[in-house]
Image (tube, rainbow, N blue to C red; front, top):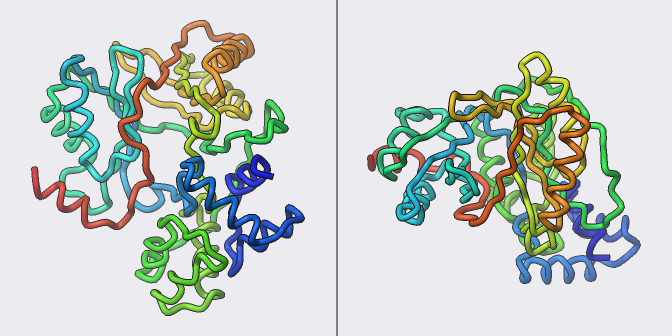
Length: 330
């Protein structure tokens, strides 16, 4: 039951009054059994969080992947400095001269802006060099570990049309609640509805507006990959001719083991413009899959960047005063 439960919760967690009861019915078990299993998986840190996953850019934030080249003796201190920024959600040490890789976002009302913020961090950390790698084209973002072993090697990536939305204070109030990790109880949304003085119908109605507009990608469970048995992840990077970028990007996104796939800028010291994050149980599995991707795409210039240390991994907290406070402190 555990493997199927984890897969279902990663795919989509119900936004209903009693979601665990709904999951139990679909799995032909009891709500009590599901609640007990989920609590155990949280205690064992296999489940990292169950919450809304938002589209940073649709919320007005500016973001980018960033790589710093930092001298070995400065790495730990540099990582702490980078982690202190509230817009850094992921930060890893990877096996490359550009060794510290992090995702950076700045708030819609940022006075410094993205590039200036990165410049300040580069100065604070004493990095020798930095490259800014914003998304030029996104082909896939879908972190779902195949805990069942039944998932097909490839899958079609669906395109979704989104409705226009103008965010109101009520939307933002609901976003602030949806981004929190839910409690493992029969009615996990109850506290949020009472805090906002909304009925369940009103609360879920606003949540569905956010989903239909693409502001909320989905509401789902995120796993601690290593604890869940997926001990290897490689950021595969590819040098792709500009005219073939879209075709090959879509091709690579179809691999189920690829969670993220983007076109990004290249630089004189960084020739790679297509990024595909690959997850597997072992490094050997990752290597085999990347070799298959190379063969299928016909690309010969590529690299595999494995994460050796996880400095930070957490969801961004949107509409948080910490962004303003960081900017005021520098």
